[in-house]
Amino acid sequence: MKKLTLFLLFFILTTSLGAEEDVKEAATEKPSESGGFGGPVLKVTQINDVFGLIVGGRAGWIYKHKYAIGGGFYGLLRDIEVETSRSAEREFEFAYSGLELEYIVAPSQDIHLSAQTLIGFGGLTDRYQQAYYIIDDYNRYGGPDDSIFIVEPQLNIVWNVKTYLQIHFGGSYRYIRGVGIEGLDNSDLNGYSVVVTFRFGRNAKVEPPDQSEYEGIYIF
Image 1 (cartoon, rainbow, N blue to C red):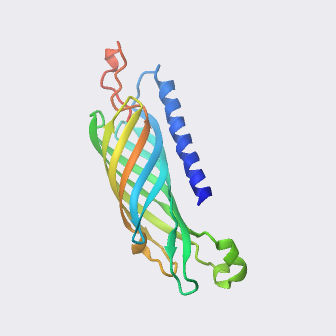
Image 2: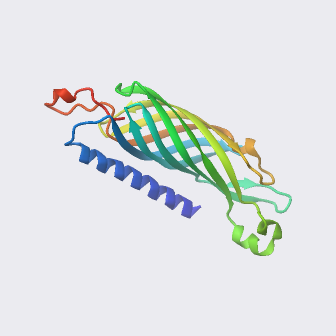
Image 3: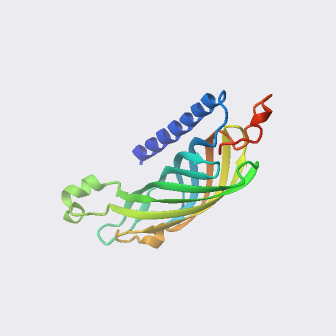
């Protein structure tokens, strides 16, 4: 879990810093209809009847202010505990990533809406896979590790905070197929999430001083 957490933190920092650099470079340029973005994402959810926190980040490109395409990577900060007939309990790490498509409604407004969908793949990894791999033929031939397919639609209320920052308050539903681990099924991983996203990039309401011809031009 430490490796996953470190990777997620690195992903969040690089996407956020990269987006901020784009903002600085764009400060002296005439605003355009397209631009990049990136930032961290927090999701509070329930998995296998236990509440947990999913953290990650997303980055992408916006076209004509309303259409966004990008990708995201997310991981559960706690392990999923599963009871099986072969042992009293096993712990699995859960992470997923995928393509994200978004449609933005009235992006020039300070408060507006957006709808997005993630389509991708994820995995469940036994924390003690290496130890079991040596002594357990069951794990040797396909074991407890599992790959899954995921679709996650989401609705957001978007707040244009600064010229470089938006905060998205949203709700999503995680629809999963392909779970094949004993003691765990699709319904244990399906579920709603409350989502907060901090998105860095050129804001949806760019009004440079003393440049009235730019007024109302936006990126996000």
